[in-house]
Image 1: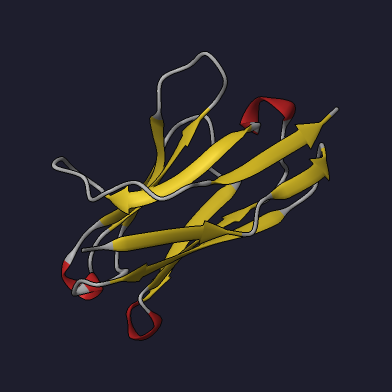
Image 2: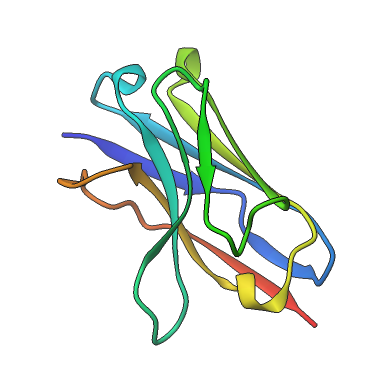
Length: 116
């Protein structure tokens, strides 16, 4: 059974930065393209950043391009999301998972709240 544990969220002022981490256990992590998703209240879950299995390429949603950076450390079974220049509209619960369906069991996520 795969377990995904997200951490690093918090309350930050607009313009600030946070670094999220996602640790995966129970499965070979390095074979999978991974992604960060977020879900704001009343909205559907959306993908914001994705990275291929080796870390050699990444894609970003237009809304975060130039501000967020996804990375991974396969030796640590961990994927990261560096978030800079945060905006109030980035407020959401952030999750990591494999990039495409079928997704692994979702973790609890980590709350990011950006105040204006």
